[in-house]
Amino acid sequence: MAEPLAGLVLPVSSWLRLAPHRHWLDMQGQRLLDFSKPSRVPHGFAALGDDGRLQPGAVADGTLTARMTHVHAVAMGRGLPGCAPLAAHGVASLRGALEDHDHGGWYLTPAINGKPPEESRKQAYLHAFVALAASSAHVAGVAGGRELLDTALPIWERHFWSEAEGVFRESFAADWSDEEDYRGANANMHSVEACMAVADVTGNGVWRHRALRIAERFIHTYARDAGYCLPEHYSREWGVLKDDHRDRPADALRPYGMTPGHFVEWAHLLLRLEAALLRADGHAPPWLVEDAIELFHSGMNNGWQRDGAPGLLYTIDWARRPVVHNRPHWCQAEAMTAAAALLKRTGHQRYEHWYRTIWDYIDTYMIDRQQGGWIQELDEHNHPSSTIQAGKADLYHAWQATIMPLLPLAPSLATAVTRPGS
Image 1 (cartoon, rainbow, N blue to C red):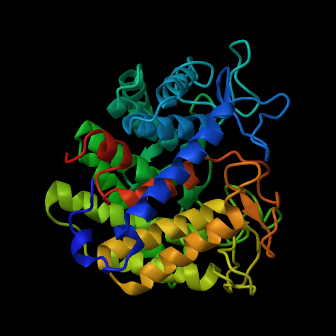
Image 2: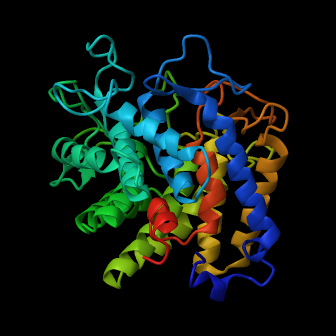
Image 3: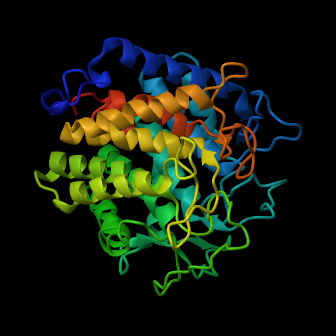
């Protein structure tokens, strides 16, 4: 399952060449999977507290359920015991109380006695993860995975994809009326990942080229024009919403300002998209790797150790000054993943330096050897915090950080694991 070109360009001393390091990654991933298993609840998966236990009254979360389904389907493909039943539970939950059986699509929380939850808007962010989960479940052979994919793709395409704009729309009311006056980089970024996975699983290249259109608008147009600092929030007419959530700067999904962690996350998605296009079509736009390099360095220059302490902070303002100094775990995971991807793509020693530096930071500050899992958020002094999000809800970012360095840039995770060499 080695990257064919990576063996030619990786420095001789690279950690990625070392069997003990690769074993360490694998063991860290298995620790994270084991920690997450108590998050199962009747209608899906719910967030765990810092101690790894469900909180009183825990209720299934739609996005978390889709992410957990994806992760456990991929882990199932790797032959890890206990993951197949959890992936099957996720699929069943996404076909159960989390699905809107009247209008189609998915809720953020389960329906109660057949009635929609209080927050019943249909979110692009959630639906991208449902598509990702369905594709991973299908390729892994999870019962009901194919049916979930056949249900999810027409809904995702019909309601959210805007062919005229080349992006996914943001949200609607439960009955698909009342489209939100908003275009968001975050939901579209995760849609790029889902599009590539769907293309691999279905063999339909249109999804891959939709991913390219999204990247071209958000990155090769808007981010490049802003010096590779990506504005996150736009109106439907594509005006930048610079004051969006100024009163809630630490919002978990739509924070005020710009997010360096997303700069680096986009960087490795661009490299994966380049690899996917090369595998499928034999060619890819050269700007994909060029923009990936610029985005990574912009993210690290604007976000890493900006206040004297190590770690990638959450947000910056329009003058590139720190706003929320806290260090979410996912920012570190995505920075490390981007460094690994750039190292495999270019062989440049500076990415080996970053790869080691970021893993050293994660190991020192975020891996929780007392209660398990990763500490999800640290403050500017690298002490545990819950300003952005409390507890240990997320498996997806941390676990993918342990497996992506072990796999090629293309195909997508579930396909690479379940159909090696495809």
